[in-house]
Length: 135
Image 1 (cartoon, rainbow, N blue to C red):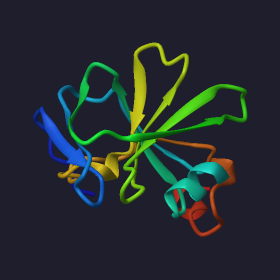
Image 2 (spheres, rainbow, N blue to C red):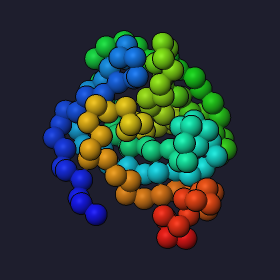
Image 3 (cartoon, rainbow, N blue to C red):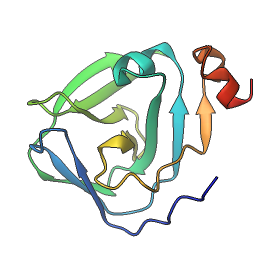
């Protein structure tokens, strides 16, 4: 399998309709695929991708995301930032975030360098995905 290209920063991204734009100014500290039911429902796919970034490393350059807050299964409050126009999910941020948040990496303009370094909740993966994970 070919290796993903090494990105340079800043990287730009935004929602589907283009109303909310951002600039990622520093490298992420990880990318993972989550196979839990909640991430599948949110992404509308077999899993959700998340990219860990610092709060200070991502700046909105156009538009302002709306926020929907939900309680996680572990009891934390999670802010879900999305475009108020098209509904694209952009960021998840716990209230006790410690300076970190998760960017939805599919919203980056250049996704050629994104590859998950790990899979979480793999035991909940759909049956057709398990062989890909080596299960």
